[in-house]
Image 1 (cartoon, rainbow, N blue to C red):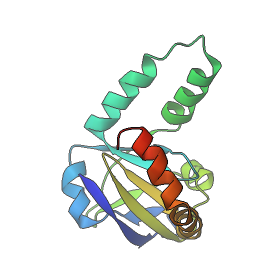
Image 2 (cartoon, rainbow, N blue to C red):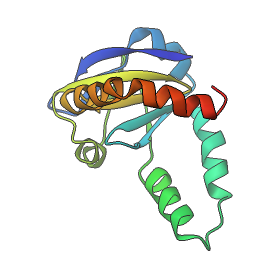
Image 3 (cartoon, rainbow, N blue to C red):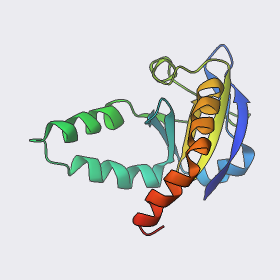
Length: 143
């Protein structure tokens, strides 16, 4: 399970360290792809395969299904860890998420999200200011 919020830097070669506590969960492989809200998603290979199968099963006759599949699948890249626990984030994904040097890695149970630190802080502040409304909407979903 991925939980928590961690600050890491991207070096000039596009490498970023993944928190040591998460590396064991990613030891069988990982996939990084475009996420939502200007972030990247990093999945363990097993979780990615489950999601990819669901995406492959979406009806190609529906424009939104095609668009979402393209967003997630065409943007995906297998990543490997180097000896220092770093992964290389491809340039096209760094551009998509507007990543600069300082990043936030946020654990969200079955995936990690990789955010530019400034964008994350803005998003988090907005979500925190609306926390009562968000909680009420989640209550309607049974959470």
